[in-house]
Length: 116
Length: 110
Image (tube, rainbow over all chains, first blue to last red):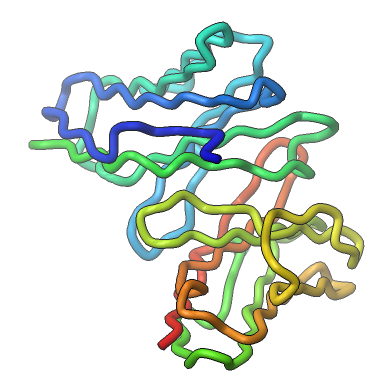
């Protein structure tokens, strides 16, 4: 049972345009969401997170939106740069205490390619 | 400050063998989690260690076991290897607000 779903295996975007990556979840107990970026031969790198008490969080070019009623979140990258080409994973957690103690449930990833 | 380190980088084993993977957490982190990432999939949680005890476990058989040492480093052991155990094994160490991943160990079972 895939509790976190990324339905687009790949996405190509022109450099300078907006990249939008989508993620859906089914477990209503999830209340903390993260996006990780992964290059080949490296481990996932944390990008940005959002708690369920918010609907938006921004960090530079990266913005995450959360729609709890739809159980949907999205990552916006503006403007997209060639270095953004990577696999992006959406992950979710229940935040019982401090986050570092919680297991992450990952989606299957979306490969983003930025076209120069 | 070194991040999360894992060894070895790559490993090839045959079915039925046993394997041990190692992880050193980021300095100051006392919690280590292990994940398995099969080809084309997202990482799946195996288990988590804190204060040398297994604190949480995912849906993996008992063939998967682990250990945490007093210096917070950790080992993942897999017995009776199956072809389906071929994957990237990721270690993550935790701060209160995020988890930092190592580069992983690529295990190939022939």
